[in-house]
Image 1 (tube, rainbow, N blue to C red):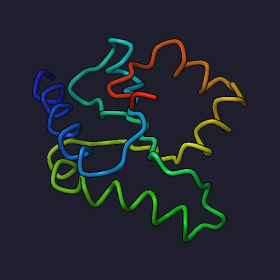
Image 2 (image 1 turned 90 degrees about the vertical axis):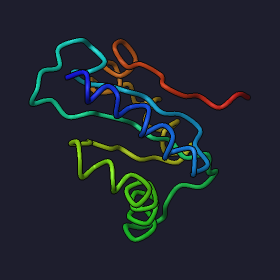
Image 3 (image 1 turned 90 degrees about the horizontal axis):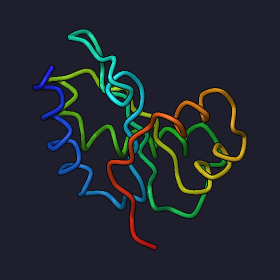
Image 4 (image 1 turned 180 degrees about the horizontal axis):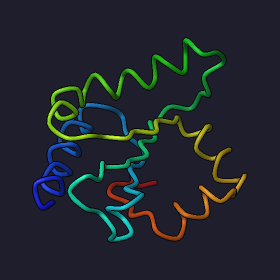
Length: 114
């Protein structure tokens, strides 16, 4: 399990190639229940001020992050949720059960200074 945590350093280094606003670890690694079968769950928020207008735009945003992390994802299972700032802010306002879990147990790995 330690090896997967070490992957977080590599992930953060690779994400440094992008214009990142925030990275949040959630799920089993954030709440302390991870085991050997657990994947690494991350929310990556890009520092971009637009919301995708269609599926192709959304897919391009997600693939931008996936391409940067491709090599690491071959070594460890990653569950990535990728948003732009407006998407993330809109999602936070909904405060559904998923957002509540992120708010209560998620660990901010990076947040751009204002």
